[in-house]
Image 1 (tube, one colour):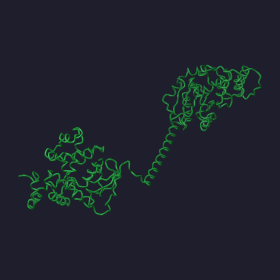
Image 2 (image 1 turned 90 degrees about the vertical axis):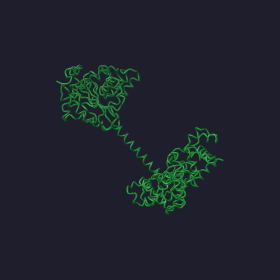
Image 3 (image 1 turned 120 degrees about the horizontal axis):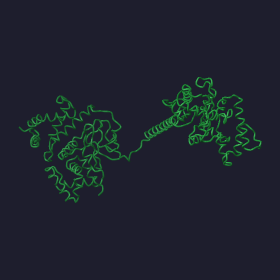
Image 4 (image 1 turned 60 degrees about the vertical axis):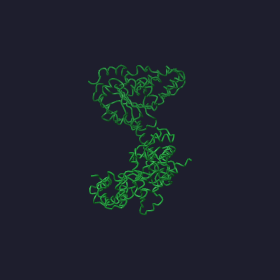
Length: 238
Length: 332
């Protein structure tokens, strides 16, 4: 018997077309997976009986509804990210994860000061941007196909602005020249083709593989506002 | 100032994509959600909060002051306890020299001859108040009592402002009734001229004997760098030191003046010095030799007649101390 995640895309397509029985069955089959995600976040062995689990199931259901089967992104990492975001948000909204704000909290990993009194932070309840979350879940899932996480990306993004700009340009070229389809199939960056198309040396492309893949993921399925950052940054010098 | 959007929130860290296409990690804050735009200041763009800055400056100034005061106290302590301030020699026949720190405690003690070395074995005077160390040293010598020790010369070289040491030193001359000093003829001399220490070091003498040597030169006596070390102490003190001539500071100056005048210590300068020391007016008559002879006679005579503490020492033959030493290497 096939488990739910062997080929979930075809099942999800049917569910999205309105097969509610299949949805219930799919969700039931997904219990261990959802429980596992919740346990990783809460370390609660009775996760199934907690509110977090209910929140996680709702997020799982939402992931089924919002998953785009055409993008070639695997469902499992996508669902995992959607569930993780929902559970963490629930934990924080219940103030279970509150901790004293430390002096170091006001700096990012590159020593820049983070302004917490940002626009819209007026003490009202935090409004989640679900569309943004879903788009980022797709982006992260896509990165996971290439064995990358956002933490790794933050460490591998070039420090020099011009190099980052070049990486954004290469990522856009990947999409424009339809190389990304092949890339999703092979799960490899088409270094040679990209080098020939762009005229950028293979070594440079290889060295900045992670950044190019990240920008490609952002440009292809990232949230609109983040895509705008990349576009504006790329055009800054033009 | 740079904008960024939160793209991922994990358990403790969040990822932010900045408008210049970097991905930075920040600690998770309760108000942070995915998709939220935040602003960050670049390090070099940080604006200074005047109140915080003043507080920081005040703190730094206070810390610096504390550090300086602490350093000064520490330096004072080190200077007070670790650096040489004065030197005290005790000449009996076994002669020793104590190096004294500013806190008037003994830094080290050096044996000036083999006898002293034997007696010093197993003794640790470091850290002891110098006057107690001197008393203990004399008591040790008396307990051993191999020599007929009557004459003791305690000499000090210390700065002019070292009033405390001077007072303590002076007390030794009047301590005939204390147990340690009972029956001893103690003479005390001192100099505020640190050059004496260097001269003594160069001649391998105790500072006490160096002061006596200087006296010998000024008075044109027969003792020089070679023979003064072995000369009998009583004889030396009797011949070279008059009554109440404790302060030897000016001797060096006079010595250099006299050698500067003619390069000859037997010249007129020396004569003047000798006369001054003996309280004699210089009538301008007579030669240097005559004056020296007079002085010698006078010193011997006064010592013999007055029955002063120098009587026994003064009448001792020059070789007596050496003989005593030979008989008393370190015990009976």
